Image (cartoon, rainbow, N blue to C red; front, side):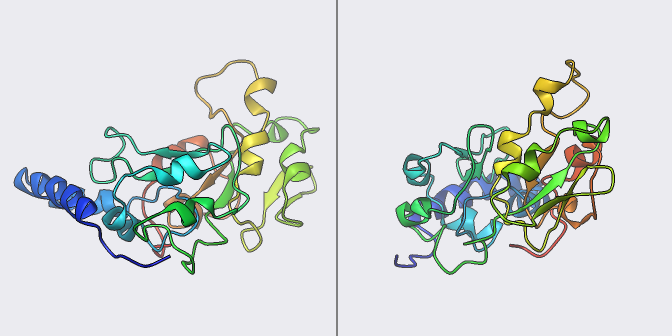
Length: 224
């Protein structure tokens, strides 16, 4: 696919929003939102590059056979409004690259660092039932990458970041919510996938739900 750079529509959308935010004294917020560590479809070069190139046409969403691509809402990001993110509640990514093929602007493109690795799974200790009692090994059993998830001496899941490609299968199949009594203080899933550029991704081992909520979209690493 030809690399078309920033599209006119994308340029105008990003420019108008950024100008408005600068006018309101929010230039720092605009920059922060452009770098926010959202989980993106394969083929993103960087968060800011995707936001600049994407014309919000939603062809990637329409091309995805697994219905896991969803556009950012205005409430989530003014600068990134309408750009694609991933939601693994209904499926996972097998890197079919149909979304990248469908992208007309190069916001998603072949050869980008995320073409075969879109994120990393993190175990949420206060949501994962294996941390309360043994017996649940669903994420390990369903992981399509051999060795990416193993069990520790207490039969709790351990994610190996050098092997995990962020496909989201573990998050999709995690039965935590159905195995627990309702508790709105914990996450619905005991394991979730986050962008490798996030603060959460920089932490070693499992994390608490509060840490996930605080650092899931905060930039903390190399822009990838």
